[in-house]
Image (cartoon, rainbow, N blue to C red; front, side, top):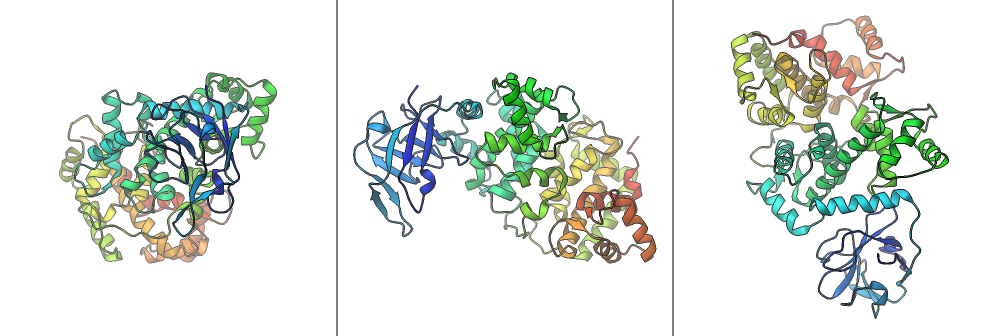
Length: 483
């Protein structure tokens, strides 16, 4: 195994390249490839032609932070000076940049990261040629953007074809990966674009891996782990810590010292320790909406493609669609017809991808991915469903109601929630009800607000308000669809 390499001496722009780089288990272009130990994902590798480069991606090295001309097998023996791109866009040599041998890391999480990087290579997620082929396959119409439904279809096909393992086809993990890509790594719209594709694949891998890891550790199957489960589970991951080391690591996660760790806490911790792209606030946002204001996008711009809804939404549009959806719910024949349309294979369950396809084709007004995912999760975790990742026939009415009202309320929240924190005070709660035409006295509104605000904190979250409003505005959607 090659010796770890220390890069030092860079000042100013791109000084983040300074640090220790550990050799990875897989070579690149027939030569050693290195990954920085710090929380930034930066790699040192050879282009296969005439350069060693330091870059954000393992690719052909065209876009990199720094390079040195050398055709040898060891970057420590490279002669000459490293060149760096300055702020004016010009490449200049920097004689201060030096490479030296460094001692191996004893951090077991760093060692785990190296192992997982090998998995990324095995799945061709870091291979440029494979990425280009996979993107062409995914973006079959060539419009430069892909939807959640297309991504889900890609994952299912890659797993079915044996290219990816079964554990990568996990719907909750996929939704987390998709949301992280569009809200954090991407430009904030509802579509994954070509330049966001590699980030999407990395997110799919990491979220599924962390989900799988949590399943191993959570031996009590209660979606929580205590210090004992944590210590026993780490050994199954190849992290052989002694009891004191395991306890110290657990205490880093257990911020409130409650003796238990939730999946969201575990996810944020492991991504900080192993995944170089960590944002703890993001995990809180996806699970509970508690920090949406920090992560959720501020604008709702859409691109003019054939599947995008680009008309500006107004209240009258929602009123007209609400009447149509309620009419479908009351007409058993229409309801069955719509179910047959979405459940085209007749297996009495529908996936997130099938739901997304129905919305795009039949209800473009509701084509808003964050609202769609919240509606989907509310349905599969609601009463009457089987607790799996599928919407069943008997909860189809609930799905329709959730799809409509989560979209309407998401749009309303954007207008009624001036501080963009995805929370409502009692005053904002009353405003929303009044604007939606709910006929209630101020006293009745205050009473209902207190019912929703179970912990008495004086605020309610977006999801809580949606569930309340669906029951209030459309109780018929809670009834089962049965023959």
